[in-house]
Length: 109
Length: 113
Image 1: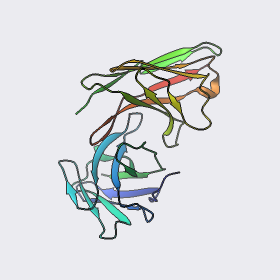
Image 2: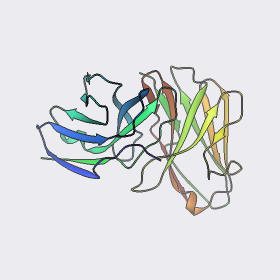
Image 3: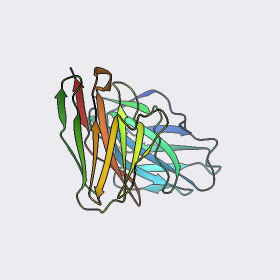
Image 4: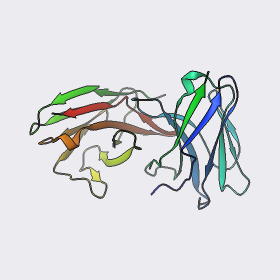
């Protein structure tokens, strides 16, 4: 079973920051938080991952709370191409990736 | 990053026939690959872990005699859906585990008629 809870859907205006929350209250000390997204009829795409510290790359930022029980994925300037299902996953390195239901993000023009 | 190629992207087959789906890791030698299945409007479900040179490991509830997995080299894993039925129609996706997480193929949409 997935160890994360995400809202089923969210809307965001084009050009604004999209903030996608994820709860993982039972996360273990050695589990990482990963984010993937799946654009319709494609394979999932890796976005970012982190353990404790906040992370940023060319796609997004990941903010993890100090107690590590929740995190937020931030897409700084959402575009229509960011419309996708976003999956938050917790896993120990080298462990299998189990997908939950994710958040369907709609970017509104 | 790693590139994972899946073939075919779409396939239609008759009920009772078998279909083979290929997954290639183009720039990474993968001792392990993963196969997922996704039904419409649902999330991805892990079916099995493909191990190079040894038997695949199947998730609970997945019929290993129906979904045959072969991982004969470090760059190729195949999934064969045997005696396909309409309920096997789905989106099948493979992946390779890299240091930063999985890289996924583009998927194969199987329709059984």
